[in-house]
Structure formats: structure tokens, C-alpha cells
Length: 105
Image 1 (cartoon, rainbow, N blue to C red):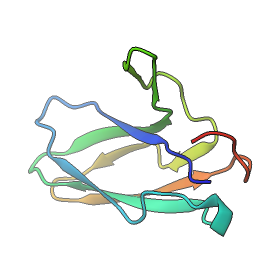
Image 2 (image 1 turned 90 degrees about the horizontal axis):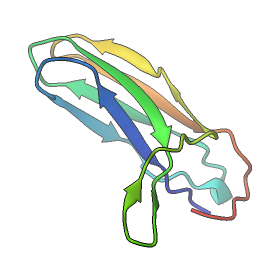
Image 3 (image 1 turned 90 degrees about the vertical axis):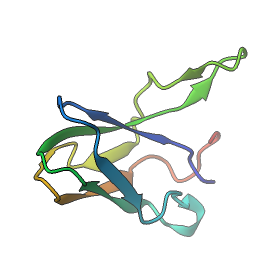
Image 4 (image 1 turned 180 degrees about the vertical axis):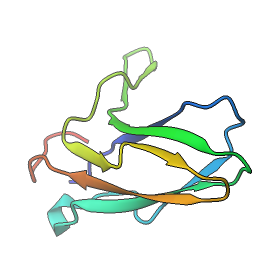
């Protein structure tokens, strides 16, 4: 089963949000023993940026309101905090450490 997890990135800088996220593979295939993927954050600006990355679970209420308050306890993102120089990039490793058989996406 493929877990559907939203990667929630927060930007803690006073500059414009001038970065891109490139995912190699956005779906983890637990049934095919694919437990990790990588993402690259590219700083397109001429300024240094500070980013904190974390995994959140996206859920919806019966009214259709999105909620991303709950942390995804079985996903690890390394590094979780980074400072990316102007026109630089940082590779993130995203790894599933939970059970192989999950009941919900």
C-alpha cells in the first residue's frame, strides 16, 4: 500500500520564497520494498534561506476542511533543518520506518 503523506516545509526567512522542491519519486511503494526517496531543495534566489522540513499527515474532516496538524511519526526527513546558500541546493532523504503493512493511506 502507498502511504499518502504530505511533506510540509516551513520557510523561516524574511526574504521571498524563492525555492523549488524536486522529488525523485513522490510515492513510497512499501509492497515493493521501496522505503525511501530523495528530494532536492533548490534555492533560486540571491539570498541565503533557512528551511525546516517535517512530515505531516494530511486529513480531511467531514466538512472537507484540510488538517495537517498531526506529525507523521513513521517518516524521517534528514536533514530536518538547513541553510541553503544563494543559488545552492540541498538533498533530503525521506525514509519510512513504520510497519510494512498499513491499514490507511
